[in-house]
Amino acid sequence: MALAKLPSLYEQLNSTPTSQDYKVHTFTSGTNNFVVTTGGDVEYLVVAGGGAGGSANAGNGGGGGAGGMLTGTFSNLSTGTYPAVVGVGGAVGTNGTSSSNQGGNGGTSSINSISATGGGAGGYYPSTNARSGGSGGGGGQNNTGGIGGGANSGTSGQGHAGGKYIVNINSGGGGGGASQVGADALYEGGHGGDGLQSYISGTLSHYSGGGGGSSHGGKGSTNLPIGGLGGGGMGNYNLSGTVQGGVNGTANTGGGGGGAGENSSMSSGGSGIVIVRYKTSSGVVATGGTETNISQVSGVSKQRFVETFSGSALDSDRWGIFDGTVTMSDYIDANSGGGVLLTSGTAIYAGGTFGLGVTSGDSVPTIAPFGNPCTMIYNLRSATATQPNTHGAGMVGQIRGDMAGNNSALWCERASFTKWKQRNINASGSQNDVQSTEPYTQDNQNWHNFRLELDASVTKGSIDGVLATTNSTYTPATGVKLTPMFGIQNQGNGSATSLEINYCEVYNR
Image 1 (cartoon, rainbow, N blue to C red):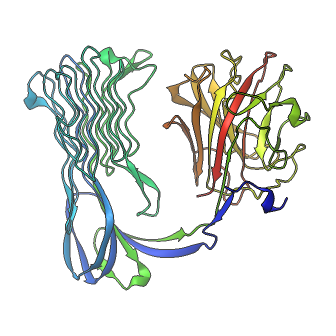
Image 2 (spheres, one colour):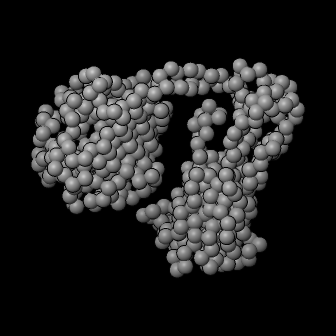
Image 3 (cartoon, rainbow, N blue to C red):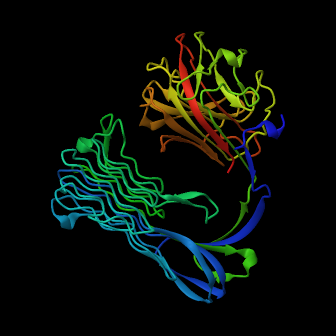
């Protein structure tokens, strides 16, 4: 099929990949010198230590705020000696009712003129507000509805405020993260705010995630108080009779510690990190820290495909049945209310899985397949209120590694009505399932956003912006052709199911 027949939002971007070599200097503790003997442009990442989770003798603490995160470039850095200071994580507090027992803020990290502020400690029972910092700590129980970070947000340009304690809820708010505020307390503790990604080390990593708040009475079996991406520790919870105290923030991420519950173990913040790098071709000469050499590809060839469905049938030139021998017309109703309605029929094991650029019979894609990495974003809802069996909601997205269904990168589905499940399959048909911590709450007729991401050695599934599953087993090898799919899996039940799809976006990155 000629590209002219594709939607206008199908694009080819940055079609000329280039490789660039860098020297990286990493500092993980204390104060150490970065010595420049020949100057030039130097990139930096500076992450402060995360704040400790809030502690309590008879109540619930807020999550610690993430350490401040700063990135940029020193333009034409002069020769000289530059101390690299790595902030420690906030110290663990002690049980009791005195504010003097509250955990500590994270330590400052710095190099040259750049200084990142340590994360604020979580709120403390009975009356001590969370502390301000790079990101603010989450509010603790009975701190008069205290806003994370006291009355302040996180430090501008470095982080965000923690979540609130809400009167009569009695759980702790989540600590703020580098990219978002901590969540307010519900009956369970609030989630920590997510941090930000950086590729400066040569590995894509998250830094500066906030700690989760403690759950009232150790609850949390339906909505665990997770820490934010970037090393945030989980807050106190009770799952199937097993009580988990606040979890420490991860070392060298600047993650905040998780909030502690009544007489449960308390947590420290994660230590910070300082990383600098420069192109080997730049002529910069320097020593210090742990030194590594990396090669990083930029300007990678990208494909992007976006399609919005507005009550019109799927175009058979772009979409085709992947499973079964039925025709597309057996599964598509062009007259739905918000998008394209797909139905699985009434037969047991009825299929209805549609692939981008796929025609019936598992033929060669008519659209150039996407490579590794690959991301698929789509908007779905159930067309009927009640859905049968474990696959019945039809909230299924796949990034398949070949046209035979093997080597699947990701298959996200609900498991026994209660959780989401991510399934990776290798070329031999062996499979590995990972069940989410997030409950399955999408069994209704509301629109929901799904994001399935393959990034080198890991696949991830997110639901409405929340990372639900991560699976590093049986990921497709580099070079495997990846084909995005979506559809209905009405397996093992003869009842009809249906879903509507409104939007789909697929891209390499």
